[in-house]
Length: 429
Image (cartoon, rainbow, N blue to C red):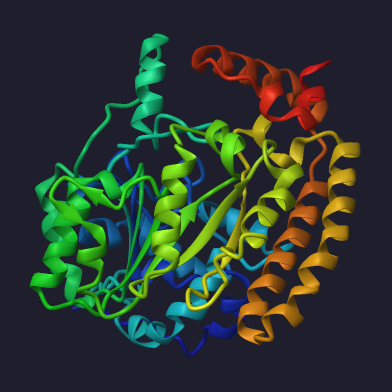
């Protein structure tokens, strides 16, 4: 029998501040190409040593030498390479690592008691599942690619490039059995894609949770809001069977023609219809996740105005959702960090002036909880300003940017200059 780890000589509180993450003890991330990772932030480029395959099974991967080493390193204030994105983000914002310590930290003492000296776990209990069943998707977002979108894969194939085989399900029975066996331990299940709401295995997993009587699991989604019904399933009906309000994060990067350009395949009127359905429902809590890229960084405030002026921003009562801002780091030529310096400075100045409008909303709300979401949005913008200043690479990436925009515009019959007149100068050398 293996000897349990002795924590008396380990400064756990110091590790929490510097290196420790809760997820290697209680979480798995399943990717669209059927790999297992410690989390969604640990991209395969950084995490080649810890990536696993679904046919290996969840328990075997969780106790693999690489994952054992990751846990021991974190306890000893050694920062794993797979986690460098979080450590970098902590220079200007709260990282996913710190968020998970806050949300799942209460489970750590029991998880540590179940950890052996060699880093293995005696009884892995999955508390948080992040699953991307496949790359099946009905959109071709500009900052995405074939790994996360079957529509991108189809388009690439027409151009003679074959990167992935689009899949519509988790086709490894062992991983499905492992997931079903972990349902009794789950506290939260997060679904993304591809587009999770057009994936059959997602609905089957929900039905299995209901069958096992685990309707207390908190469900969270990242979705493009294009569908609320799929085949014989009605999402609103399924979600109504769960105890907690379902957290829905709508991937919305802009509105109307800009939205339809950034996320090709978007039908804005249909998206807004579904958005309003969720906003007005007592079954869901709707939030917005905006991915910030070179396309929308400069006009974020007009997007805010679009929903604020119609009084349908996610923080309104009774919805009380949030507006999350996520920076795009790659492809590098599409990152807002790589925009020309003078343009970034102009955008920052305009956004800081816009804070006056956001601050005035405190009196309008008369509600500190709702206004807290507005202050969080301002804080996110300030973090973007810091990130924007951290890189100055326009000279290196400008040709890549122009080539990419012109190539995709030609493929799709779209016109960057028409949709983004304020950025048209970027196409001129």
